[in-house]
Length: 200
Image (spheres, rainbow, N blue to C red):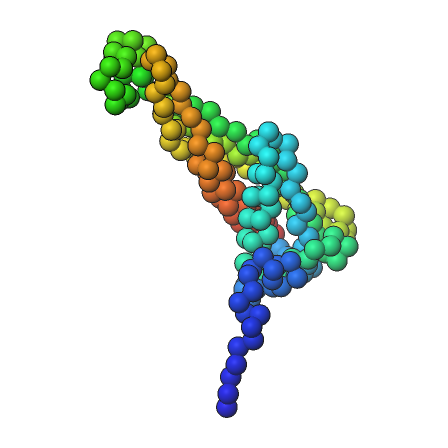
C-alpha cells in the first residue's frame, strides 16, 4: 500500500488559520459548556502611540488560539459563536538603568576628560511596558464572559553614543524595542488565553 502526503501540509500556519483550519488538540470544558465551536478574533485596536503593535498582538493571539485546537478560528464574525477582542492601551518605554558619561570609553585620547563627563547621566537600559485589554463575548446569548487588562514588561539595553564636546546620548535601537514588544505580545496573549481556559 502506498501513502502520499498532500502538498498543502507545507502551507504556513497563518494560511491555515485564515481558512478556518483547526489544529488537533484537547477540548476545554468552558468552551463545551457554552457551545463555543467557532471563534472570531477581532482586529486589535491600538490606543497607544506605537504604530504596528496591534499587528503583533493580533498575530500572536490568532496563532495561540489556533494552536490550542479546541476551537475553530473564522474570518467573519457572523460565522462565530463568540468574539475575542483586544485593545492595546499602552506600549511605551522609559529609562530603566542610569549610568554616567565617565563610564563610557571615547576611544579618542584627545577627547573630553572624565570629570566633565561624570556629571552627565544617561540611560544604559530601557524598560518596555505593554498593556492589553482583552474581552471574550458570546453571541448567543450576547454576554461578556471574560475581561481583563494584562500588563507585561521587559528591559533591553540602550545603544550608548558619546558625541562631540563631551555630550552623550542614549539611543533607542528600534529593532530591540520592537523585538521586546513582540515578546511581550506573545507573553500577554498566552496569559489571556490561559485565563479564558480556566473559566467554568
